[in-house]
Image 1 (cartoon, protein in one colour):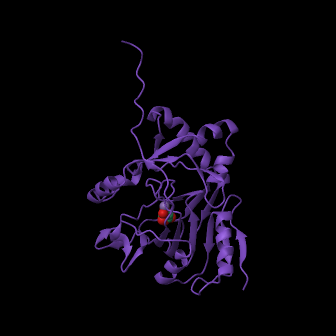
Image 2: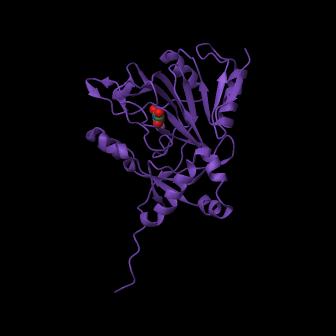
Image 3: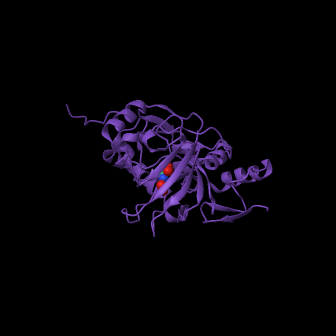
Length: 295
Ligand code: OGA
Ligand code: MN
């Protein structure tokens, strides 16, 4: 059956109709999907009843997979599969139950940000539990030439300890994570290696300041860019159904897990992550705050 591509919103996202991810896929069909991934940034495959092996096998066609350090939340026996879940795990509430509650791009706070992620829906609340996506090419392209030219030359610091959810996670584990992940500087404008297009690459969850600028100088412009990036016209909102597999490109899109559901009802997702190229470097300190000229 030939593949059909149905766009999901004006800004980004497409459903691939006619693919069966439980079966081996021809090179031709895969090339079509890869092309659609670069064109639409987010791809949705509905009604896929997948084993973890099949989820991993399809993900592997895009590249090597990351093995997530949150080992307590890996699917037992599958180090490549992370459970994003509000199920109780080992008698404790899961630290991944609030994953992604601010706009972000996966692992941008490391020097090897994830290329893409494939999230598979097992259980969703009766309503909500949506995920939103924003097209960061559009965010960049709709800025004025003057601002684009300045941003093209800037770097920004991405620091995982900026995230709001950090305080609610296991302190010993987070201390270890912070030690392993010192703040990194990333280009504010990222050139996509496949499409050659420029995308804005700052996000409210982890971007703290522009390199060489003070926090106070950085905040107003960063806040403007955060708000500009996620205006409704630039977004797609995924309403999950069990057996949806959805993948996104972290190089050109940001995403947000919306807390729009009854948290006493189960939401259970499985995620693989495609390893990305090396990007950025360990950051320097922020510039000192300017002081008054007074003696
Ligand atoms: C993620 C993430 C979104 C969601 O898996 O990287 O941010 O809606 N999850 O669960
Ligand atoms: Mn995420």
